[in-house]
Amino acid sequence: DKVAFITGGGSGIGFRIAEIFMRHGCHTVIASRSLPRVLTAARKLAGATGQRCLPLSMDVRVPPAVMAAVDQALKEFGRIDILINCAAGNFLCPAGALSFNAFKTVMDIDTSGTFNVSRVLYEKFFRDHGGVIVNITATLGNRGQALQVHAGSAKAAVDAMTRHLAVEWGPQNIRVNSLAPGPISGTEGLRRLGGPQASLSTKVTASPLQRLGNKTEIAHSVLYLASPLASYVTGAVLVADGGAWLTFPNGVKGLADFASFSAKL
Image 1 (cartoon, helix red, strand yellow):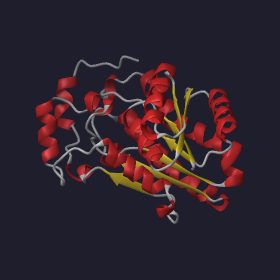
Image 2 (cartoon, helix red, strand yellow):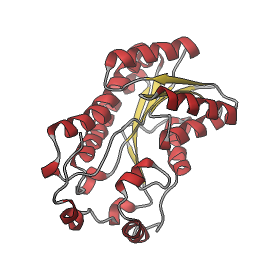
Image 3 (cartoon, one colour):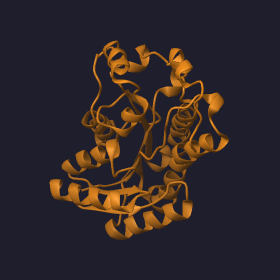
Image 4 (cartoon, helix red, strand yellow):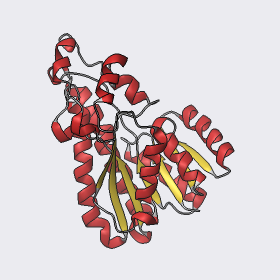
């Protein structure tokens, strides 16, 4: 009977997190820039689980929009117990071809957006009632990944933010953790970032568990971090990638294929 506020909850991993939380008795708020997307998603989620799901249109980069959405969620449910920061933007691009605006856009969505929503929820509810924050990040910055300086930098900053907020907000009974997924089947991210199927298959079979992950596995990892089972876990980064970050090639050999590439933003 808890309430979870999930950014990027209208599709992909965010949608599956909402579904799994709802199947465990949680009500959800799913927020996305696209209102039609979250309206459709909310109908599906409520119909499948019997739990309440509030769809909201919100841009995480715009603090007044975040404040209005959180106010609406609190008006609907009276409380928010869990925040899942899942909204993100990404694409492949060499650093030398990456426009200033493209880099800034990803930092604004991933890093600033995570802070904006966390900060607003802290002020409006968590500071006085406690809560749990799970930030969806990545392992891109652990070794340095070709074509991903924008997303790797943004997600590494969020992992640092996780530790800072865990330290500052722990005394208010607020736990803050990161979950870093690996390559996950059936996601927009894999379609955009996975590269040619043959190349992806070779890289996946070379990873320790020799397969892609699925969205339900990621949702279960988030469920653990958000639940009382993780009541003594804060400031941590849980990597759920089948060990892929240990063995995945970092893409340097593929840079030649992007010699004439430029960012679209």
